[in-house]
Amino acid sequence: MESFQRGELCPSLNGTDLYPETSLKNFSRGKGNQAQQPPPPQASCTPSSVISCPICNPRSSWDPDALGLAYCGVIHRDLKSLEQDMAPGDTMAGHMENPRGHEKSNQEGHIWGSMRNTTLIQGSGLLLLLVFWNSVTWHLQRFWDASGYFCQTQWENLLSTFEGYEWILYHIGVILVPGLCFWGFSGLLLLVDTTEKPTFISRYRIQHGKNEPVDPVKLRQALRTVFFNQNFISIPMLVIYYPFLKWRRDPCSRELPTFHWFLVEMACFTLLQEILFYYVHRLFHHPMLYKKTHKKHHEWTAPIGVVSIYADPLEHVFANMLPVLVGPLAMGSHLSSITVWLSMVLITSIINHTGYHLPFLPSPEFHEYHHLKSNQCYGVLGLMDHLHGTDTLFKQTKAYERHVILLGFTPLSESIPDSPKKTSSALGPSGLFPHQ
Ligand SMILES: [Zn+2]
Ligand SMILES: [Zn+2]
Image 1 (cartoon, rainbow, N blue to C red):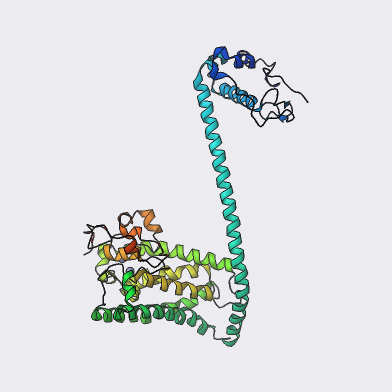
Image 2: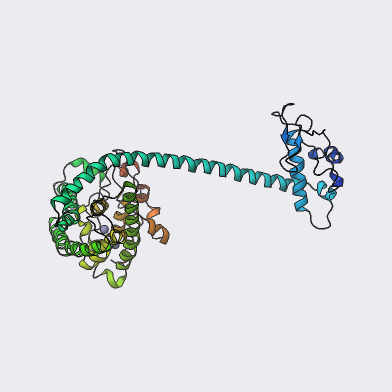
């Protein structure tokens, strides 16, 4: 094992005469320039530790006690960066007298160091996230396996009971179950809106003073349209949907989807609905279509749950139904996934129209703002609005600050009160009614 004394060059440089002006002796004595003095050996170096020189020659070894770990590193880094920086015809001596070379080298070293640290931190973070995610899905999968076995058995029992009449199961799954979810939830909200009881719920109302109580004439008219849309549009569409689904893949097949596939399906349905609903909805806001179609839905500037499907028939087909039905057809989904999806869509839509920002439920502020202003917030999640910049005014409002899941019982209108000047509306600047 070779070892070297302080003041000697690394063997790969020594003798090659590449940098005759910059032997360590010249460098360390530095023509009287203290800034060029090499740093002292690091405290961590011990006489017994011998390390390989990582730059010039991995096979030779350096005695850090004699030469110093930092000393070796600094010299090699400086020589190499100077060599790279040299213009043709330059001399090494000239560069050594120019401190900017060292500054640049130090900066590069700093940047590379930062990048290395960032990569290390991000890599560790990603690894932790992966481990955490795997752990979560593993637990959920275990739960799913346990309950999935039960569900699979029940589903097979149902299939054998309805053997030859699977279409009945289909209609229960796409009409009866989502219908019960819709009327169960919006029925409860109707009770609250018409009786104003329990009184504490009014604290969570987004537009205070609106629908307290709800106008009975307006409500009856809305209910008539909702019944019409459900019975004469939604149900016929779902009946016609069945042969298309069967053509794609039998929705009543024996095997239920796995938990992971179910999650993938829900994510794809949600994304497809967000994209399609955004563009169709925005099209219905075009002046040529708005007055004859979509204005009906916007009669409720302060909506209530049941008006989530209060819409013109054309709008109900293209904006409410099709964006929801495209996903399951495209993916050839199982009836169980379609039932969960349709029920989820109806409940989410009711929440978006409740007019209350209730604890532990998704925030309805985004769609409430759309009902009030008409030219903002066309999507469901807000993803497309973010991409198209159709939520810029919304983002300047108190409603945006309140657009979170309320994880307590203090209403957000109390914890994030309106600005003193904006007494009439927390939902932003007025005068933004392009269609009214
Ligand atoms: Zn709406
Ligand atoms: Zn609209």
